[in-house]
Amino acid sequence: MALQDLPVVLGGYRLMITEAPAVKVRELEDGSVVPVLDRVTQQEQFVVTLFAKPLPVAGKKAGKGEEIRVNLPGDPGEGFEEGMYVELVGAVVNTYEIPDRMDPRKIASAGLWFKAAGLKPVARAVRPAA
Image (cartoon, rainbow, N blue to C red; front, side, top):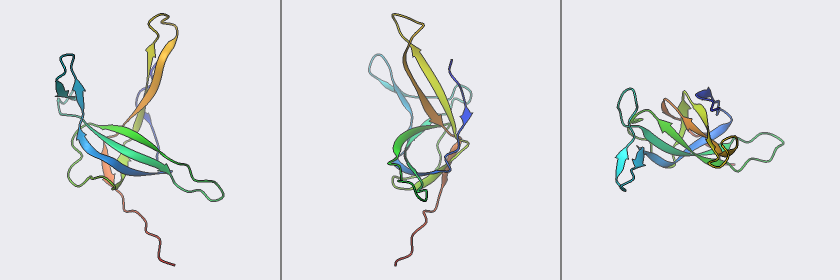
């Protein structure tokens, strides 16, 4: 059973763009590449890659962070470039399961994917010089 559109709160993470938003594409069997369209609006979907690093917590070692890819329903607009800090608008997470071919009662692969309604720029706090 796959859970869909579970709200996710990423307030404890700093999100930095590592790959600027681009049109999401799918490779066809013949090797050609086509844009992925939203089933309802028929708009091209976008994808952005972010580095999600946990914010420091007093008394605990900071986590290393991880890269995540986030699907967007359309073009987030101009100005979203590598190195920029952002917030996700309406972030959700979805799960998927792929059954084993030999025994459908078993799960061969499972995972999750993120999507958001959009991106919002975030000013990064700068520490004053000592």
